Length: 224
Image (cartoon, rainbow, N blue to C red; front, side, top):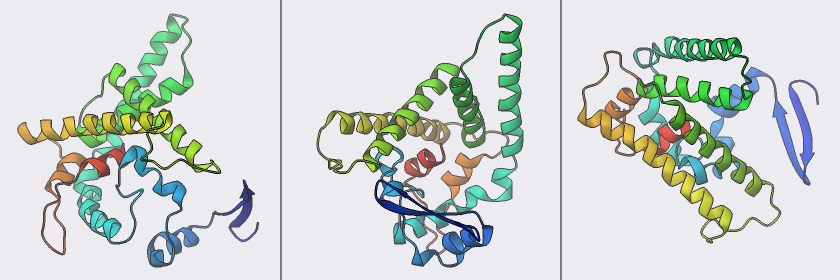
């Protein structure tokens, strides 16, 4: 490849990778109507729901407008402090384990770091270690099943009750319950002192219709 484009083949399918920012701007923003998501990306809905990552067309445009307030300055100002707090927490844990001569799992620690930062940014909450491991493991195993489906020559329809499909459905259900628990808690309790992305999403309205969205779970699952 050259000029910021690279072409390659995987299992008799052709792919193009881009490295230039202006190409990404063209595909994702200025000319996005000319490009559609591949089935690989749409299959993410099997684990993350039909949020922004997996949706297309009018559904994507509606959800994108609804999500916009969650990415404004007042909702994002806590992102850097939340990430720094999560990193500091892991560093202190690693230092303690090092003093004790204990080994750590790099994969598990990166999962814990990601979930800790995500919980602080989205929910203003430090997700406990056990819960963080549970959720990140479901995500990892679910996405592994999605990748297996994406590379299958004859993927089984999602509605068929195969072992893999049942596991995927179970992961999606449990992840939805995890996110919905935070939504229910926020609706019945006072907001945190600093607005987070969950507050912004719950308060968001469609800028064209003024309607408030009642479908937040898929969007939050996608962000998680």
